[in-house]
Amino acid sequence: MQKAIMDRVFIKPDEAKQGAIIIEEKTKTKSGVVQSVGDDVKAVEVGDHVIFYDWADLPALDGVIAVRESYILGILTDE
Image 1 (tube, one colour):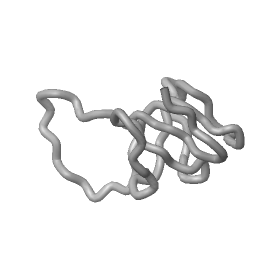
Image 2: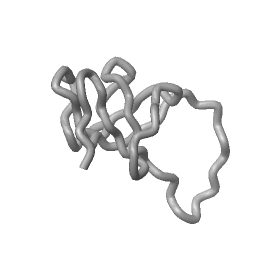
Image 3: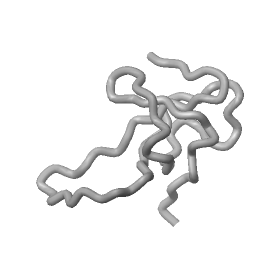
């Protein structure tokens, strides 16, 4: 288990769907599900589906990445 600290958020990035044709875009954002949040994080919770800057991620472990809370652009909802 990984525990984020300070203002860090651990995110498991969304993966491309199998069998889909992927056209590479010059996008600057990614999305994923929050796995862990540091004690200073106020805007998101574990389980939130978020969008964040593509260049903001740092590798953690097991396909999870670490970003600062300020690099998260928003929470994706079904509404």
